Image 1 (cartoon, rainbow, N blue to C red):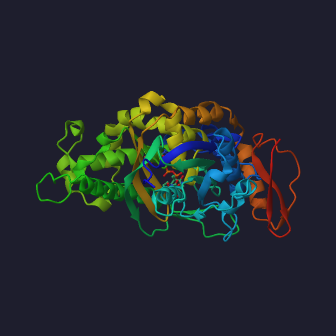
Image 2: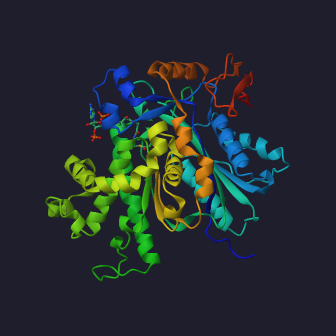
Image 3: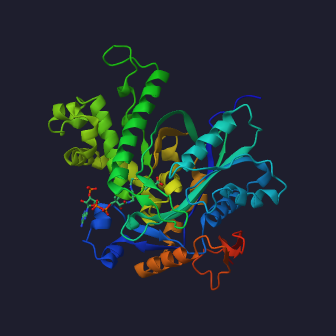
Amino acid sequence: PPRPKDVGILAMEMYFPRRCISEEELEEFDGVSKGKYTIGLGQKYMACCDDREDINSFLLTAVHNLLEKYDIDPTSIGRIDVGTETAVDLSKASKTFLMDLFAAAGNTDVEGVDSKNACYGSTAALFNAVNWVESSSWDGRNALVVCGDIAIYAEGSGRPSGGAGACAMLIGPNAPLAVEPIRGTHMVHAYDFYKPKLDSEYPEVDGPLSITSYISAVDASYAAFRKKHAKAKKVASLNGAGEASLAAFSLADVDYPVFHSPYGKMVQKAHARLVYNDFLANPAHPKYAAVANPAALLAQPHKESLLDKTLEKTFMAVAKTDFDTRVEASMKCARRCGNMYTASLYGGLSSLVASVEPAELLGKRISMFAYGSGIASSFFTIKVKGDTSAIRANLDLVNRLAAIKVVPCQEYVDSLKLREEHHLLKSWTPAGSVDNIWPGAYYLEEVDGKYRRKYARAP
Ligand code: HMG
């Protein structure tokens, strides 16, 4: 059979909790200086999870809704790749819980399990699914990529940069959102953010290291991408030395840059850093006329540049208008739900699809920066090759995000206390209402005395 073309995202569904809190109110509640979370971190709202939700209930809902909204036959799926760092079992994949939705239709011939590396699991899952469809093992069916997380932090440790959400995507040929072949990847070992505790959902975080790690990953994965791009396009070096030129690809080749969003300000810094990288490759371009002392910046060692606040401020100012016109459209989920870890980047993509008119989006190139602490990162691109109207209509993102109820901060703190009490119990029969669960969404119904979890759907 002919090789499949334009493999990518055919359909998307987002899931997020029914409640959120305001970061402005959280500043007051926590007694910190005004603006610390809203301006300092660029946060607006953050999702608030019920203790009867876990990652499996999130993913079940996302997949159930995707199948229903797009009328997808469960037997038409040949592979499911899951990305999450919130799994409730060290052995049993969250993917296996999703199999109930497929086995009921007689389909158990479904490849794929979970991919884990902090927020990067979703991108690993996407690459796996795309690779499968493009491979000689492909059986002609579509794949699913499913990702999501509950991002919560111990008090005093990154708590305002939390959030929650999930995403399910249908992957196959002739996709309106085609994943392009070149990927620039940077993976190294670091302890910037990690989860060594089995008895707690909270990560260990080295905040400052996580920020410099994220930024150095932007640099390295962008450089790796540009090198491969130049090689693929056989672009001659600017200095004629024959080495493929980094300057061959720049943000000018991208219409909408999308980033993993731990919090709003980090995305602004990351975007400004790409502009800085473009400046290093082509400093004489008139758009950098306002950059003071370019010679000093060009001579600065990379390590120093990561900690240079003046550099950061300079390029955030240079990049400001570009951020507002090309990046902000991808921030809708992040502004309402906060960090969704693995789902954050794909929440960004769905925000973009929901924000830009399909006719306007057609033919455009989207860049994706995936980052997972630990560290795994990639820079890759998606080309809009078809009509995104159906994805936009089915996501109904603007209305659904607005429908999330803003609750008092005390309710968030209380819900985290309950999660702490109920975390990985051997036996638990939850009582009370499921009012904080969206109608039709899955929730944890019981833990049966042998750690086995059962899920039900809210009325
Ligand atoms: P912090 O101690 O809360 O904040 O830590 P800070 O004191 O460092 O201040 C942050 C910024 O707010 C600073 O500005 C302050 O000047 C400013 P910047 O230097 O960034 O320009 N500020 C104010 N601005 C206006 N008005 C005020 C005010 N006060 C301060 N009143 C930190 C912040 C992000 C480190 C913390 O929240 C944290 O540890 N979060 C978790 C880790 C994280 O999100 N890291 C991001 C990169 S790593 C990543 O993305 C991976 C991740 O998603 C996990 C995964 O991969 O699975 C996290």
